[in-house]
Image (cartoon, rainbow, N blue to C red; front, side, top):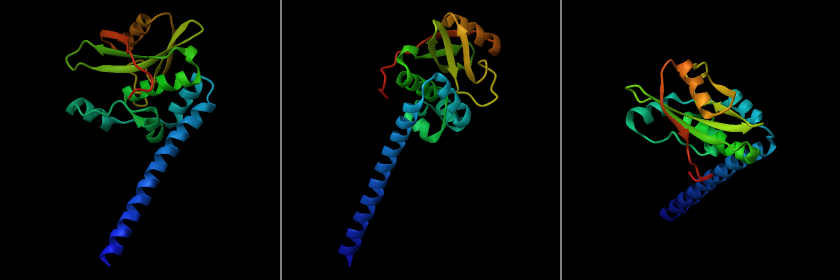
Length: 185
């Protein structure tokens, strides 16, 4: 009887484990299949508008306790449809590269000069020689960084900096492109 229970338990764990692996493969395939049908940054924009919700709980863990979790791989963010600015920026970066490398997407980081040390991540890309910024890593209705959406056209990153400072009502201490090795999480 013990042998039967042990075999049953092993079988159960194998089935559940395999189902989990299959689900992970399905999620990855769903992201890849969906993105393979997208042809423009506007498809990414539409996905964020229809699906993405800012995860305030994740933000608080990250900010108050230093618990990592801000950076998600694109497949996880696509599956959960939630995240914070880092996950959204890197999702945009990876996804725009897949759609059209000529966009030359680049994550950007900026930090305000205030006591709290507020910072934020967005993703820039190029279109017709102009710079655009995709910022979906904020709550719906949030206006602090110029609002949720695609901003531009700008001539250079410093023009976007001025745009954010006007909306935020405070100076940005530093702003720069983030070096990211695609696909390295």
